[in-house]
Each structure stands twice: as structure tokens, then as C-alpha cells.
Amino acid sequence: MSEQRPGAARWVPETLSRRSLREAVQECRGCELYRDATQAVMGDGDRDAELMLLGEQPGDREDREGEPFVGPAGKVLDEALAEVGISPGDVYITNVVKHFRWSGTRGKQRIHQSPTRAQVAACGPWLEAELRMVRPTGVVLLGGTAGQAVYGAGFRVGEARGRLEEWPSSFAVERPPAWVLATTHPSAVLRSDDRRSAYDGLVADLRIAAEQLAT
Ligand code: URA
Ligand code: SF4
Image: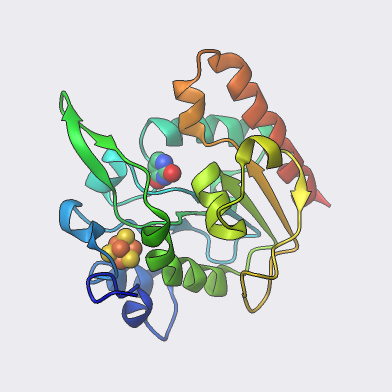
């Protein structure tokens, strides 16, 4: 990787805890995204959780508050999780990229831009560290960016969603999760012309994850 984008590995601490990761990520200069963000947003939740939820990157609210999924998309997600009986306390939730990428503003809100593949790759060591720490049994991929981070550039969430899959051997982890399930990103529900059916689709997919957890 280039000098401007050395990747996050050198900032990842040896001893993994929620606290050590949260502190260390604030120092990360693994890519250029730290420059325009307020702070880094590490994952949150139970470090012994069976389920890891994986989003794209913090949004405007997350960037200000320093916590993942506390904005509008998080509200949709919380509702959908509650509907299938997954308690927020039973999951670890994070993003493939830890700094907010944005460009321009609309009113007071900064406009989200999806991270590039190179930025996702640069940030990968943080996700790998979280996977080592949490060792989830199942992973739910929220949207295309999370899917591509795990399965590669060919991943299409529209085709892959709602099916239990195996963790790919191309993504080396010490203890691979037993299953992976992709679904749409909750912010896609908010953007959809037909919110109700998009939301119902998210709930239906999450129900499959909930059933796996119950077995
Ligand atoms: N969207 C994401 O992917 N992650 C967040 O934390 C918030 C919105
Ligand atoms: Fe580091 Fe990731 Fe932030 Fe880039 S986006 S500076 S790799 S934490």
C-alpha cells in the first residue's frame, strides 16, 4: 500500500479489548479518511456476542457521537431486530470502515459517500481484530459494502441476500463464523420508494439469523 494509505495494521493493539480498540483507532492514519471525520467509530456491543452485525461506515450522527448505528439507519435496524426477537445487548455491531467518508453538505447534514475498495482494504485490520476478539458464530452483512469486504468485489447484495452462506476461505480468520447472512442496508430501507416492503424484506432476512441463533 502507498505511504499515504499504509493500512491500519500498525495501529492495531496486541491486546484486544473493546477499550483498547476504541482508544487505538483514534490514532489510526491507515488511510486519508481520518482527516475529514470528527472521530473514529469502533464497534460496540457484547464482546462475547454470538452475532456480529456488519455495516458500511459511520454516518453523520455516528461521526458526531462516536457510536455505530445511532442515527436514522440505526433506528430502523433496532426496530427490525426487536421484531425478530434479537436483543441489541446480544450483538456486536460494527462497520467495515471506521471513519465517516463524506463530501458536501445538505442543510446541516454532511453527504455520505461510500468508501472505496482501497479504503475498505486499508481499514480491514480493525475488522479482523474485532473478529478475533468477538469470535461470532454468525455474521449479518448489512448491504453491499459489507458484503464486498467479506466476499470480494463481485458480491451483489440483491442476489445474495436472505441466504445462509459459509464464511469465505479467502478471508482468513482464526475461528471462522459458522454462517453468514447478507441483507439490505437499513439506510436502503429509508431511501426506498416502497419503505414498507423494503423494511419487511430486512425483517424477513433477520428472522433467518434469529432462527439460527435459537438452534
Ligand atoms: N450506516 C452504517 O453502515 N453504519 C453506521 O454505523 C451508521 C449508518
Ligand atoms: Fe484508519 Fe480505517 Fe480510519 Fe482509514 S478509515 S484512518 S484505515 S480507521
